[in-house]
Image (cartoon, rainbow, N blue to C red; front, side, top):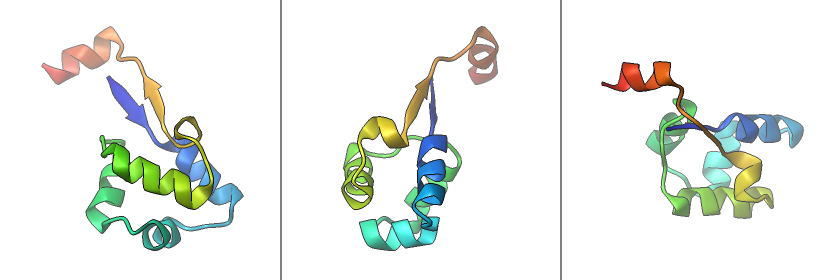
Length: 76
């Protein structure tokens, strides 16, 4: 299983907003932003804060990507 926040970073560019601006506006911890930059999981509460701040939906900021057989081998 893999998560991608590429849609979020593109949305921020479209809104001319930096990740630091989002972090402050949504009251998100710096380590949470680091997790997102590494495409790691964050809580739904964090995603909800981001959606509220950007007036977006979950699908606008996060994307689920199926693991390939190659990815599964790397996890073991």
